[in-house]
Image (tube, rainbow, N blue to C red; front, top):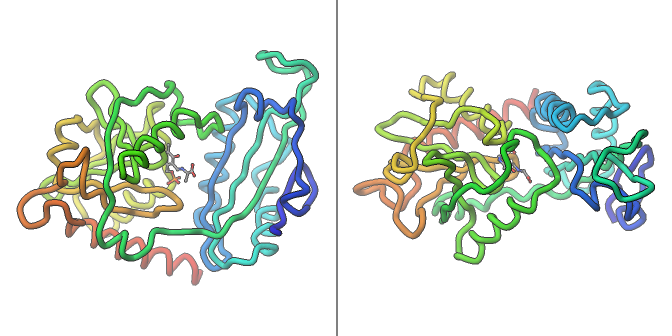
Length: 288
Ligand code: PDD
């Protein structure tokens, strides 16, 4: 049984219990982070912790943990886990309340939870074949920049993909690409990598930043700008990115092959370059 951290204690996962009056349970009132760990080294930890604190600020929740205190606790959870490659979840809620009331309690004791699961990145065959996606209107709220635990819309949207025999749902809002149900989406057109700009309409992905940094450092032409729905459908390549999926090519969208000519419906050449850079970068980080 894996060991988790809950409110100052390290304990077996089946012994970790949260109050039914926790606002995370009753209202989805909390934030979270998912941090990939390779060979027991957390990837982009500082960036994930900065985003966690941005999300906490965004929901006006003060945690008595300074950013500097997280790495030791996370490090202990990583040590206590069996796998070398892990996915670490940090979740902070506004804690328990005495009576059910939407308004914040006068005094809050946040619930802080950390657990690790083995990291399951996509199998090589899946990466080589690419994945199928569907698309729909982005009906989530207008603070998609906050990584909040109220994930019902994201769950329904991801389930829509699964029930259509696909792996991800690509979201469009007001005629523009926003992101996926649980990923960021990139397009490639005529050799140029296109990424939607960070805004309140999408999560500022840590993997998204890595991909743009790698594009810049390897001289891949790229533009961060609004991407029209038609441009997305006409793209030469589409990718999804996230901490657990890394970079994955989307090869069909709503049943239509992505891309043109001999590359239609297959992972494209720009994807393979980026994937190579990403793996090299990961190796460098793991060594360092
Ligand atoms: N989700 N957009 C959404 C809505 C997400 O849920 C995620 C990741 C991303 C990608 O962010 P990053 O590259 O920092 O993982 C974008 C995580 C993995 C999850 O909810 O499990």
